[in-house]
Image 1: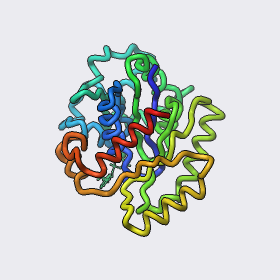
Image 2: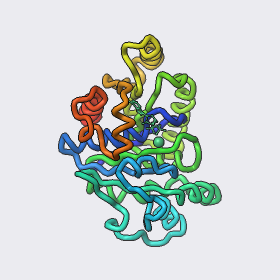
Image 3: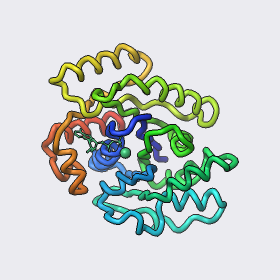
Image 4: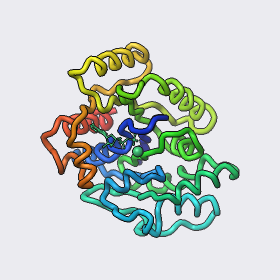
Length: 259
Ligand SMILES: Nc1ncnc2c1ncn2[C@@H]1O[C@H](COP(=O)(O)OP(=O)(O)O)[C@@H](O)[C@H]1O
Ligand SMILES: [Mg+2]
C-alpha cells in the first residue's frame, strides 16, 4: 500500500512544486512507482510535467473534487492519470479555485481528496501532493488525505515565521481529522551552504526542533538549473543530472524511502 506524502508550507515560493516534481522522479529512479497530484489551482506542477494548455484539460483534480462533492461517479483513471517518463500525475487547473469556495458550504468537506486518493494507494508506492500556500479548505483536504507532510522551508523568506503555525495546524488535523498524519521532516530549499544566512537559519531550525522533528540531511542548493529545468518541463535528473540540486533530490528520495 502506497504512502501519501504532502509537500506543504503556509508560504509561497519556498520550492514546494519544484520539490514535488523532482522528488517524484528521484523516487522513480530508485524503482518506486509514483503518482504526483497537483493540488494548487495555479497548476505549476502540471506545467512542470509539460502540459501547455492546462485550461483545455477535460478532467483535472478540480473536476474530480467537484464530482466527489456532488456524489457523482468519478471518470475512469485513464481519463485523469497522465504519465510522463515513468512518473504518473493528476493535473490541476483553475477549476480547483471554484472547488475551494464550494467546499466551505459542504458537510464533511475535509475528506474529499482522501476519497479520491484512497482507491489509488494500492497502485503506487508513493502519492505526492503539491499544495497551495494558504490554510484554506484545500490545504485541509490535503492534510486530511496525507500520511506524512514534508515541510519546505526557504531560509531567504523568514523561514521560522509561519513554521510554528503550520505545525500547530498539523497537530490540530491529527487530533481532529486524521490521526495517521505525521511530519516526515523539514526540508531546507534554496539553501546555499556557503552563505551565512543559510547556516544561521539551519542552526536555528535544528535547535528549535531537535529531537522533535526530523530535519532532512539533504538540503537543496540554489541553482539556476532549477529555473531552466522548469522552463523546459524536465526534472533535474534529465536536465542537469550532475547538478548539486539534482544530487540533493536524489539523497532526499533515499531519506524518504528509508523512513
Ligand atoms: N533550488 C532552487 N534553486 C533556484 N531556484 C529555485 C529552487 N527551487 C525553486 N526555485 C524557484 O523558486 C520559485 C518558487 O519555487 P516553487 O517550487 O514554485 O515554490 P512554491 O511551490 O512553494 O510556490 C520558482 O521560480 C522556482 O523555479
Ligand atoms: Mg507551488
